[in-house]
Image (tube, one colour):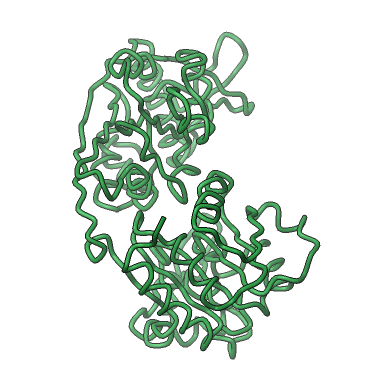
Length: 410
């Protein structure tokens, strides 16, 4: 197997930046080969022991790339939840896959950031992401500051940095005024971080792939509309089994209507239940005989799919790639770092309110050598699907203000 010419060229550029800056950020579009470029960069800087941090679902594909291309450096692949289990300290390079998900919280860093910086902040780092700051430029700070070689290292914390790079505003929350640090001056930030970044798009790679989006309407059971209407009217439903559905805030109402619209509900007790399996039955019948991948959103939706499909589905990517089984993955954990290229098409049983996650989940299906890709969305006859889709398909979040407008709630 050989790397594509652009991957060779990019890895050469990345190695030069890494040797000079100790940080290189591969800001590549999905499916153009961030992982292979990173592995080749490790080789070109003569790394001996590499720590590769990614999501569990990506372990097998990374190991496969490592084996297939015959790399001789030692590699240890972990997810962020396992970092405390790493006892060795002889790594000479780190690869941080989907770095925005590891380090991008603000204004305060997350716990993983603190552990990583203390243990491995002194090491050169290759960061990978297609969406390094999709929500706010302020997400940039901790991604670079996690390294001892950060171009922002003169700032002792985010708040000091924000004084120079953020238009700090005050906003009202239920408990009072809080500082809003989301309005970052990216023009000034980019002047500083550009020497550390390699950008590459699908178009530059010659990736020509059309995504055909199909909307399929699913008629839900009458009880589903009854429950939604009752909840919108009363904000509470007391069940005969003693379980209660409460939507006493606009945020809670949006979430409960969203759940019910696709057939499940999480009660006030924390228990969940499938109320209407119409969407799962529809998918099973409509796509019978096809090798598909199904994306769900709420945990209870997985139980619904298991009840309807039984042993026809799997949540294991290796089993999906090696058998005729259908892959089922949760949107929040299946939108980054994996490929569903074996699927004939991608089917969304449900999807969340984040425009970024929505677009990334679709990108899991696209394949460089496949000119067209089909993605299906199962729209509930009574749920929020149409309204949410209208926002997230434009890479915008569906927020509570929009929900209030759509449903006339207060």
